[in-house]
Image 1: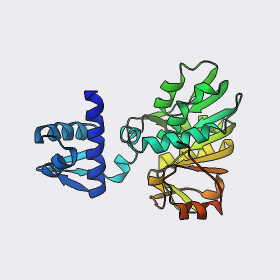
Image 2: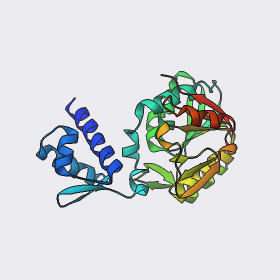
Image 3: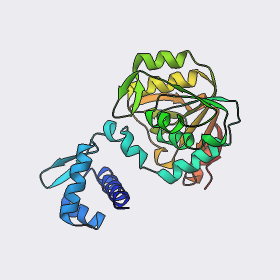
Length: 256
């Protein structure tokens, strides 16, 4: 319980600093509701994990390309929304299918549900998903290797791309860091290349996006919305935006 409370508190601190760009230790005492000593311990841990940068008297957010891609940060962000989306995505699956999962934590939420839908063939480059899936009975797991990235906790690079290009699957489940009403984006080119390869290897493409990513752009264009067959959002997606999106693509809203 103590560890869980610390994790929730550190997530709250990280979210506050990212939203504001920087914060003093005194501000974070108020935000977290703990002592100055506890805040400093939390900041030391968050700095060690590469999520925040400490300076004298306070802390600042790392550049967006660091914290938005950091697997450890993403694992604790918008968890309920990702589970909603994953539950709806799981309804697209039938035993016997082959699927690709990218290294998004929304796809990881889906991976945790796949034991109920076997037999399946699942290919992924995300180490977290590999760990979840390797003990599942009647599931053929294809671990896509390459150059290991500690930040993303996944495999990237040319070996990863070549492995994906040799596959043909029924469905690819992909998420990304930002989207507008007609385009998807990511801030890192090596991630863009892997996600594009996954889309090219799948008969059907499903985009999984929690509402925190909507109405935003990032440095690199990934693919137009028209390249996807279906978009799954969580229940906090703005209704007006959902209506606009439905004129362009089939949209489903996640379940509680």
